[in-house]
Length: 411
Image 1: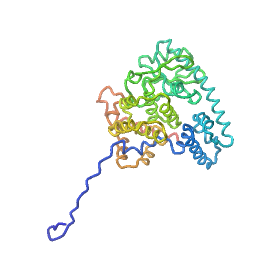
Image 2: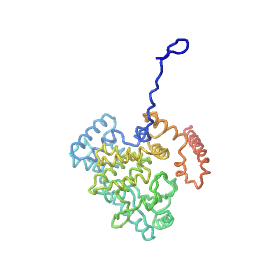
Image 3: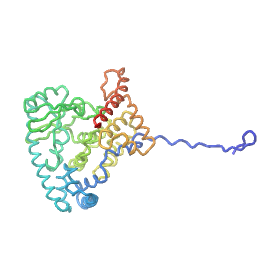
Image 4: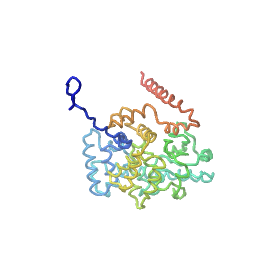
């Protein structure tokens, strides 16, 4: 206590040191949780992927929760129909009690996927042959590459289109070659620049990509992404596919920035890569995560897979989380853009999901103005003097979209 002028005693206030501001990885942990399956979805995934008692307990937990709903179990399962062949396999291997009428439904779903996969392989093999004859080297990505390698059978991995990666200089030649083989260009906005979507006369779709990710910020040189490629076969037709370490990073990166993550196939894909007989090179995985600047969302997704019971080495997870802790503003913006892209990623939901004050500060900054490095990658600016125009364009586009939505809802 001290005595001030006039004899008035004043308490001397001692300020405690301010708590250090948390890094992006810690502050946004709750925000980026919107990327993850719900507890209900996790129970279904455990039932599909695990063996033994954990699968049976997870199925019982999911079934009890769903039986409280009004709809029959088959209708509840229809929402995740691409996982049904995995659930059918688990029901046989683990002795699950599927409930009345569910087992025939699962068998029918498996037969349907077998028929689809036969058709898929036939058309995909023809497309790959056409591209090879035209001198276009196409790398098979994600779904088809995984179905051909880490899944027990093609029917276990739903494939509804074929994603191929080609060099930019070969894109036009690839489109021309496929046009002569019964494919026509689809007039729709592609997920990312440098992609072309084509449709076969049978309705089968094929996408030619010149970059692996829909978010340009995550791109790396073509040669780096395809280094160490392995050869796979689809109906006897050989084709290159990225190394399995690259494919794991690609699966996680794709899940972090695309709305399609809600179909949960990314979890099954990552699980089969992690639990496969071939050991993954985690040094290569960490190097690729760093090269693609994907550490922030990858740390969240790998932590979830680790809790699910997949084989994620603790030291590798720790290293990726260390990289995530060093994420700069551009990496934070890329991660938040990815979270924003899917269900539950609207600004209101992201705000409610964010548990920390620092996380909300990150969210406000992201919503108000993206970091310059992220804007440069997104808009592929030839010169920095165009950067201010991008900051004007972004809110103007948001206003136009908002007005369009209101007009569409008007009677």
